[in-house]
Image (spheres, rainbow, N blue to C red):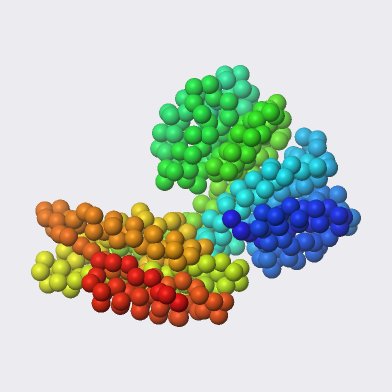
Length: 456
């Protein structure tokens, strides 16, 4: 996972040390030696995460964090404070200023890299939502991009811990500010989380009858809970399991014995971020439904795709990352309409869209391009991986007949797919689409029901 990391420290030796550690993991590293310089870099949207020293002249790290979180244009950027301060009161102060984590010098390399990767992965989801909202705004649809959540908010928290005394202490710490529900059975917790509208899962890593890390993985694979924040409760000696939990998708952690003020600060941070992403997601969803989705399939329409594809291509070129485009066409669709009627054609289009959704990622852009033609844009994906995804879609379509006429009968359906990838820094959206369309033409010419990748 590549990302642009801003390291902020007024000591050049510290900058060089962190820069070397991050470069070794293939992160792109920017540096700043003052808080003001860091704010300017973040304002230009030039970084994905900030590693922030606290003890700096003129403007300390706490003030930098507060300013970043007060600015709607930068509040979504994760912050890790890297400092020699190690008291619970220092952590609380940092968390309340807006930091996502607080690492004490000398920093463990594995802990640093794991935490950076975890926070970057979470930021990718927010970035995609913000970019889609910005695209909606640019084409004339009202969508709030620079949204923020102000003040203290109450959340609904589930605590999964089979230690009775521990659960009661957590309830005592959080109960005045949040609604807290308790569960000792991990499997039952998963069902309750999927059914309830929770803002946070607090999970003990030391469950007696169930592997807590397995529950983290399950929460991240269930659609209803995929974006639910997870805060792990860990013992000081559980660093290896903790790092594995962060790698699996946990958002944050707190170490026993639990400091009440630190717990409150971490929970507030997670609930606030949950509300921020929900509000952003709702804004995007509402605006998309108004004008840029296809009413029959629920996919984005051609107007939105053409504008958003240009943004994705520019971002891909700017960061030197791969991007692939699939054009999919339902074979002999006209004969389906002629033989079975247009209602049956609509049934096929809806079913096709549903099956295609199951084969692509949340960050992929799936659109109805027109008629029986569809486009999937896959960021950070090279031609070989895109070809495997295309084959998976093709098999999914051909593998089972499509129900039509309210399920009274079923018909065989196949598709042809053409693929092209960004081939050079100068490739634009028009050129990539043209090559994908030419590959689609070859797939149809060669017999249909096949995938053809552009050779450029």
